[in-house]
Image (cartoon, rainbow, N blue to C red; front, top):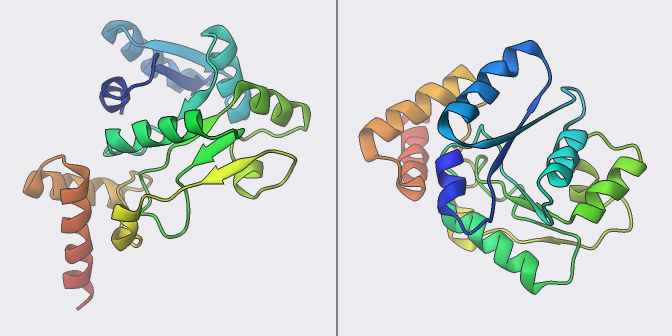
Length: 190
C-alpha cells in the first residue's frame, strides 16, 4: 500500500498506527524503509489521523487503508483532483456500489478537528453518514461499478488467500484482479 501511495500524486506518505506494543513492527518497518510514520491512540483512529496531520502539516489528509493492497493509484489521484476542484470538506469514493478494497477519503484538516471536537473517534463515519454540517462529495468510479460484489481487501484469511491466488494468476493490476475474482466467484457458486 505504501508503494501505491508513493506512486500517486500525494505530497507525503505517512503510515499511522496505534500505540499498542504489537504495532512496533510497523514503525520499525517504516524506519527501515524510509517511510514516515506516526503513532497515536489505538482506540481513536481520528486522533491518529489528526495527530499525523498536525505532525506533518498535512491539509488535506488523504486516507487509504493498509488492508487494501490493490487500490488503484489512479483512484487516489482522482479523489485528490476532485477534492481540489470542489469546494467541500470531504471527498470519498465509498458507496455500496463499489468493490470493497478501493476506498479513498480526502478530508480537510479543519474537518478532522471539528470531528474531534464533536467527540468522534473515527475520521469518516459521521461524514459518510452525512451527520453534521460538513460539505461532502461521494463519487464512485463508474468503471468499477461492475465489480460491486468483489472484495480486494484483506480483512480475513479467506480474503488473503483469494487475493494471493488471483495475483498469482493475473498479476497485480487491480482491474485484472477484480475481473478474475468476479468470474471466480461465479464459478465457485455455480
